[in-house]
Image (cartoon, rainbow, N blue to C red):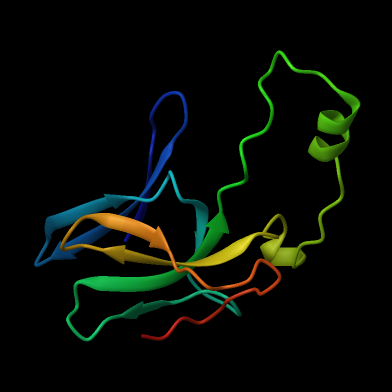
Length: 125
């Protein structure tokens, strides 16, 4: 299951693995991504054959902007630049990427080799 934990300064987005009503593992994906897409055109989860890893699609974490003390025309333009998204239910989802959570070693990683102009969907191991 996917849970959002209230934490300061920023909430954490975690994936949890439950078995027979007990929490088995929790992996924090906040460093790597934003909202996880669970259903629809781009969503879904795919378990590996060993059942220790799961592949899924989520919004890539946006690159860190300039420090708050830096005000420049370029930074202001970038912050307010139009970015095309997928509209309607996926509004704001313009940076999608493929991720793998490994519950054995408790890590999350973006799958390498997927170009930035590709929008992954419906992962399969």
